[in-house]
Length: 120
Image 1 (tube, rainbow, N blue to C red):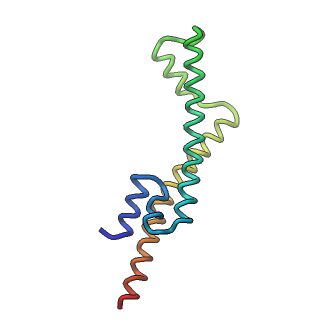
Image 2 (image 1 turned 135 degrees about the vertical axis):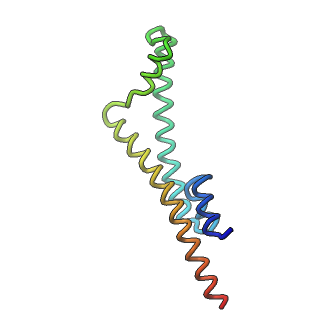
Image 3 (image 1 turned 45 degrees about the vertical axis):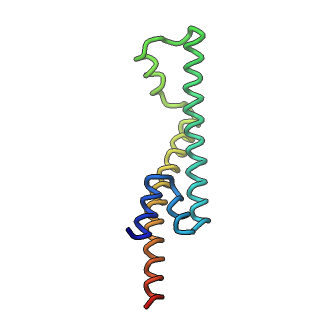
């Protein structure tokens, strides 16, 4: 298996930026992993805040005990600017993942081509 395919698979199945680290492109890998981690942290923290709020409502007796109503509360979108920030963070994570896959493959192919030219 070529380095470019390994790097793309690492970025696809492990985490964005891992393929770049495999190719020893640490700056690119750090930028991709950092942006993905920051956006993932934001999404998870907002999700946990929402779950905590619902759990507190249930414990205090204000919230429903019916699973269908709890599911409806969980499915509600955050209001206001949180909704936009949540969507932006989700988009940043997806873009970082896709860029990590395609750029690590492209970088690996370019490195292989340069290595092949130097050997001849």
